Amino acid sequence: MKLTKKTNILISSLLLVMTAVLTIISGLDFKKFADYETEFVLRENIITRVEKFSKYSPKLEKTVGDSDIYIIEGEEPGPSVLIIGGTHPNEPSSQLTATLLLENIIVAKGTVYIITEANKSAFTHSQPQEASSMYYHIATMNGQRTFKFGSRATNNTEQWPNPDIYVHRTSGQKLSNIDTRNLNRAYPGCEDGTYTEKVAYAITQCIIQNNIDVTIDLHEASPEYLTINAIVAHQRATSVAAKAAFKMDMEGVLISVEVSPTNLHGLSHRELGDFTDTLAFLCETSNASQGKIRGKFTEDLIITGEDKFYQKASELGVLYAAPVHLNERVARHVLSILSILNAYNDIYGSNERGKFIVNDIPTYENIINNGIGYYLLDSLL
Ligand SMILES: [Zn+2]
View 1 (cartoon, protein in one colour):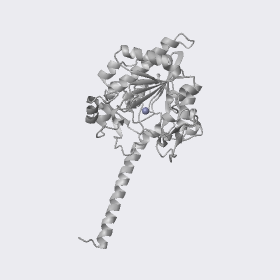
View 2 (tube, rainbow, N blue to C red):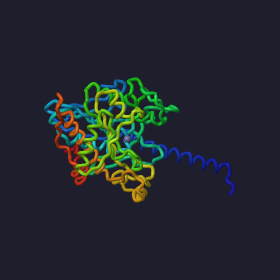
View 3 (cartoon, rainbow, N blue to C red):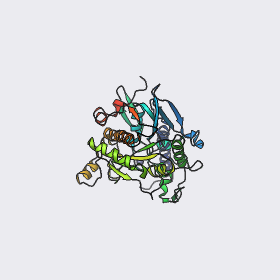
View 4 (cartoon, helix red, strand yellow):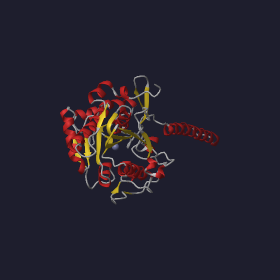
């Protein structure tokens, strides 16, 4: 059938209008996601103070990247630890572990610094073409909490375009261009650099200016990725990492220790160890929802880690660690943090600053048995 010119124009116009409507609808959805503020419940009289990244990296002021740093000081002064959650917003156990600690721990001696949204811009979008769920929900004792599943990289709205090659500023190392927007390739950062470098600079300066003894950067990785269920430690931190891994093994939770490669730059465990006096660690758990061989992306996949293709891969023995439920991934991170602090106490506790005494850290078994939601607070209460 031959269409008349008039019918052609009519069909083309209709398609154009439909495209415009769909673009507006999806655009509004993206805008709503970008603007959604994840809630973190701050306990009165427990959280000593909240600082902004811009205190340490002034050019982040009034930008989306001006994240919060929550500080819990113990009754007694002592050593200090920085827990970094939310470097990569497609790795949910990272942010959830930081949130769980923020809403539960009591510090008796020492100071705990907690970041829940290290790269906040990366929480304002999701990875293109991955069709990922934008939110996931955790049932709490009296309701539910909503968290965002974002991207590994800074949003283009903050940093664009990518160069052809990303040259890491302090080492000159050449990296893939996508890593120009990856916070964990931007350390130690730069006050006048790209948005991502300014964020990295805030964290580096926070460590330097507060003389933070221990830094633990929380991550997840695909089950087919080699560095998984692992603690990666800067070379000054390997004795603490080894002792922490031994403590975890004693509890039946196996974890490997890797020494941060000296020729791989921009990562927290390399640059924070080199450019500050902190003992730098990075912990990884196994996350099917960021994996490459997963099937359909659902909220259930984020939470349970269950996926028929990963199940098959696991049966074939080609994975480094089987994907597990989010409860277990958070439990593993929490135990890793506790074990690192205890190992620090064993090795450095007789120093002038003494030992950490941090109470009310939920145990590995309890987090798995009760679920994360049991430990997340309901803000309305
Ligand atoms: Zn990561």
